[in-house]
Image (cartoon, rainbow, N blue to C red; front, side, top):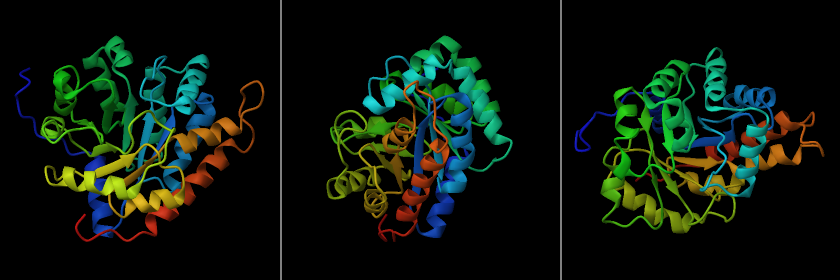
Length: 288
């Protein structure tokens, strides 16, 4: 396929959800948890409850042995899941199970290309679509490699979501946005996840810069841990993404053997509810 070929962005639950949020005049909450952390059953229980707790879009991390963009908390969660036997195929099975009780909440898989490459791109896209996946974030596939997965995903009816960062220059940004779909994920800090705090004032200018070039919704992630921080981002962006803080809730509930305590699921979902209240209580700027 020619890298220059223009493919229309597919209509997915992601687009419908952001249209709904816009009609409601509010930003959304995007949550991230790692599939299979701390085990399959607990992870599925969290997934099954997270939309009811207030998540508007669900990101599921696919465990990988070398998650280079992730901080210590998410790295540890990935290794825990792998040790418990979690795979990409089992992640899709988890999503398929979730879809039996929720066919509306968008689901985005976030991870790295290696497991998809080993699975086989065509087979993966077919199975992902069948399972109910709406979008992909593959952090180690830049726009220059869009023929590997981005363009095939769009043809398969799955959004491909690109990352932009404070270091993304004005010259490069149009290249990043050329085949982005679903939403744009703006990384609010330089560095890995869970290590610094996002500053809404610093983020605002970057969000405006992206909006001048794209009509896609903008979700801001990395460095958002509290309802107050999520509310601050909700004033300037279309969604706030929270991941490491939820993974930390899982970690704090593990016993010495790495087994989840009785409050693991409820503690994670309680934080989701608090974050959702912060986001939903915020009025959007008229220009956003």
